[in-house]
Length: 259
Image (cartoon, rainbow, N blue to C red; front, side, top):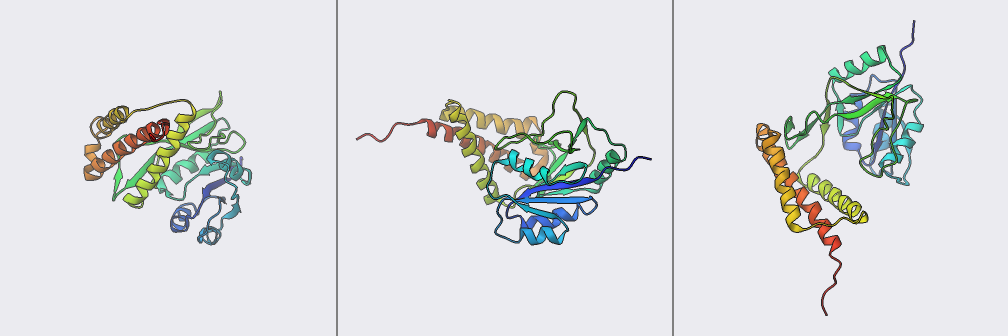
């Protein structure tokens, strides 16, 4: 009779004391919890250790991809489930994962549908759901790439991608300020990366992309079915789209003031 492989839930965190306890409470069924911290100044370590997690620190931030690689190196279990501190594993997802471990394969990674809670409502339209993310795989099979941001699980030829049932709940924004701060940071990073590749932009291009974003989310992706939150999210996403193109335009405008 084969033995069920062991499973580790793995998180990379920083200053997540307010989120972490609720997250780890949905992971009390796994064999191991590994938390890699990048220099928290709050009670993140105490919260993690109170939940029985193995806690490590790497404060020399190498980027998201490499930080995940370092975290994976600490794992002792056979399989890995990646979770962020603002996410929660539902009972249905737990059942789906346990079914995989009961009959494990060695050449597959598993995608999980993620359901986001935004401004007081779960967003099921706007192109935001099911928002599948690759989060479950055998440790010996693969890992994350080296990307600084938007890191991805490496899926080489021969690796299959299978779909799990059950949502991963994502409590993505605390409030409007949190949204604006996160989107501004993303816009700046996007513009910097595009500029490094020699790309340029214009205000009119930003307006067109913003209009396209709103139309796609609110109308084509039925954001109107998400009520006022769907409208607000579509407007804010259009604004964020405009800002990133405007930021690229500003960065590319190198002329100084006239003397």
